[in-house]
Every structure is written in structure tokens, then in C-alpha cells.
View 1 (cartoon, rainbow, N blue to C red):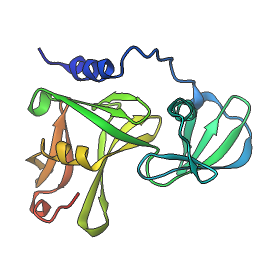
View 2: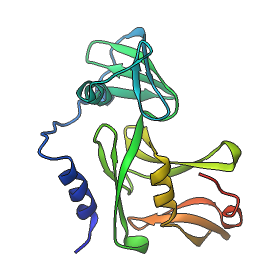
View 3: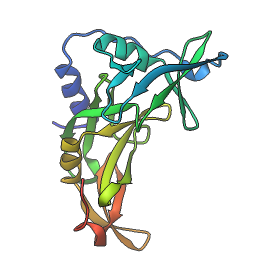
View 4: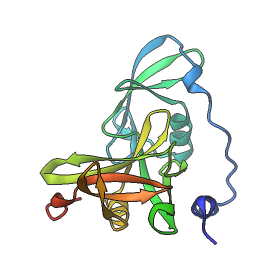
Length: 195
């Protein structure tokens, strides 16, 4: 039996018995800006503080839970303060993918490096950006305007699910999930596409 919950259940099972709490309501917090913090999230999803990688996963998860995006700027927020941080590309990296079903009814679930679990659908769409040298970078929406960049291996796995469909009179290569079709590139550009 497959369905929307199956892929997510398998990802949750892979995380073990870790208890998770709900995320804080950072979208409702508007504290005063207190300046920039020397914290950076690299394009590969590694968090740095003062130039040194943060080696404690629990600390990275805590910081990620209070991450907020406003326009193109990123902040760590609490009810009483807001500090700016640098994000090189996307704040998260999708590191695991599970797929159930085929075609339009297919379910695709992702796990990020901080154990956020998302199923592709209306709340968690896919987008594709052109990278240097005709490359392609896929992203999945995680929450509140925060996106996860897929690893190179997951990019290949995701694109292997693609097919060509007519979108507004143009043949487009894309990926179907949760009754949606996410266009990647015009079908005529598939041959020159690099990941």
C-alpha cells in the first residue's frame, strides 16, 4: 500500500525514537533588530559560527527552528531579539528522499540535514534554478519561505522521475508529485542539462 503518509513514515522511522517538539511561531515574532551575528550557512547546508563549523547537530537544529526569512534577508529570532545571519544559497539541504507510487499520484518526501520532513505538495513545492555552466539546482520548500537545496545525488534521483508534458502549449520536462507537475526546463533543453 502506498500513499501520502507512506514515504513520510519511512523517513520518520529512519530518524529513530527522537522526540520532536513543534516549531516556535517565529512568523508572529517581530522583536527589534540587534545587529548581525557572525553566523553563516554555506551552500552545502553547513552552519558556521565565527568561521568555524558548528559541530553539535542539536545546536544547529535549535538555531534552524528560530530561523526567519524577511524578503532576501535571514534572521535568528526570539520573542525579544532578532539577529541577522548570512545564507549563501538555501538554509537547508535535502539529504534523503523517499518515493511512493508513480505519475501524478506519486508521493515524494524529503528529509533535511536538520531532520525537517516534507512531502512535496501545495505547502512544499519544488522549484528549479539554473546554475552555472547550464547546470540545474532543485529546491523544495520547507517552511515560511525557507527552502532546502537537494544534494547532487538527490538531484539525479529526482530528475530520473521526470517526463515531458505539454505546459501552456510548450513541451516541458518536469516532475509530477501529489497531483502537480513541476516544470524543470523546456524539453528541447534536456540534452544540454547538467546537474
